[in-house]
Length: 133
Image 1 (cartoon, rainbow, N blue to C red):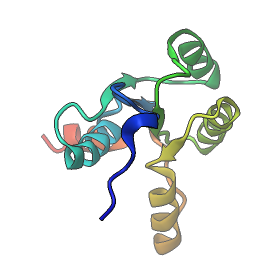
Image 2: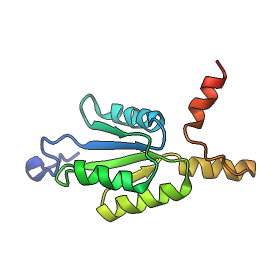
Image 3: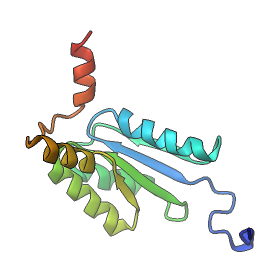
Image 4: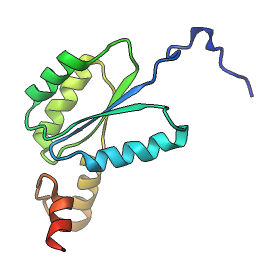
């Protein structure tokens, strides 16, 4: 198998940055990102979390202040509200930042299977855990 020519490696010594965005704590997305990153060894990526996002303006402000266009990055997110999810996806697309919606497709499939509308409750998995105790 041929090796990559690392002389013009885009990433060089820069550690890629993964942003985890959520309308709750971001535990779900963070766990998925950590599981994926574990496939590449310690220190393969840096993870930053932006929790309790209630509107697209919060995301705009955050990336206006914190985004480094010279550092490879992507966003993994979990938003219960479909409208907010789309607004944020559009904002990230406008900035050229790749993003992965970790919750929306799963909710859509389960909604199709059950024939029910989702509650769109923020942090619902943690509310269920708390009520079981």
